[in-house]
Image 1 (tube, one colour):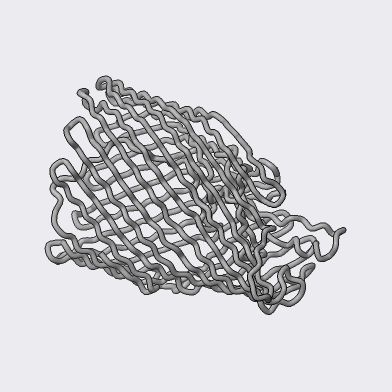
Image 2 (cartoon, rainbow, N blue to C red):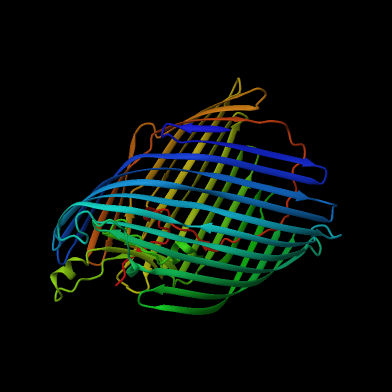
Length: 591
């Protein structure tokens, strides 16, 4: 298949699946090139005591691309043994150009223009091998699995400052470069055993070992009008972070008539070695802790197509390299961000009640849930207080917003989620997915920092099949403000319409899609309030887009490739935020 859009992006993909005797193979390759038109932004920060107002106006544009490759191989010598091998790789980079004008008035008077070029690399490599052994009793099986993953998180930028007036941090013509090579490797071994003793009782047990090696190395230099770039060793801020997790679990399931019960318990021992290196210290910290992670689910079948469930589970989320990385991103010298290598994993307790029903025309699923976390990994922003008794130059240089993370969140959330799909006729299908929640967040370090309120989301769509292999589609949705301790955001919405034509016995599909055609730009605002300051960010993002895609299918696969029923799923790592507007756990102001 191939696709393109009016932003200037394009891509292509190919998929192959085949099976010969006892061997099956699938392969998928895709490439994309993305172009983001010019977006405009405004930023205003007001400091209260002493008074100062910083105003920044800018624009940015970006482009980039990447390649995705996945392959899977299956070998089934008999009905007892099954071997799976898979390999996936994806990688690419994005380039961005941003221009900014800044004016500061008050206790710090200066202005400047800046131009920044940045590059971010993304990607990953995953290799997995699985062996499944079936026994005489139906459903009894033993699975042995191994997986290796490599995930880089590299970035670099170069900034130049011109037209500098007043007492800014950098002189006129100053340039700086910064590179960060960060990422992690993960090795996982897992053993699972399942035994359905009879129609009523089922037991399962397993062991898992995870080794994670995260690291970060920075390289900084500056240019002040001389012929050569000079290294800046004062900004050394490197990290080695090793983590070893050993766990075992056991589960029991009981079924009797319409009733069902499932209980489980997992024990996890975590040991960490943190090597932190900067100009002030070079130290290694060792930590170790043990967690018991229980879960249970009770179900009752109200009818042939209706089920009621209720349960509890505890979830451990561990910060990944995005949150741990101490590298300081100061491409905008007035707003800097960095991670915290001393973060601990957070423990979330979840309670839920679920009702589901299905029929030929209507599928319905509703969930009511309550969750709380006492040590949530939380983003917080602050301005270090200046010392009015020190030199005026030192006092001026303190006006920088710092953003980082700490285990300071005490969060509670009660909410409901709803999914409905309706097929009134064989040619029309609709769906609606949404939810609303009430969240209360407070800081464990400052009782005065607290926020609560409603948030929600809703999105749905319609598909209508017409004669002559035509299909019309419409989708849309809205995402409301996520409740955060410091930050309020404007809603985000989208809508799209599509038409698809199938030809040559449904082997060729041609699709045309238009998104947000009523407005060229969408305004998004974010307001953050902290101790002694308030700042507002406004972004105007291009949204109107027209896309075309073409897909052609060759051949027909009469039997699918078999895969093992149990495999490795490591969902305990917290993924990084793509930007501050998507902060999941809220922000607080440190003191």
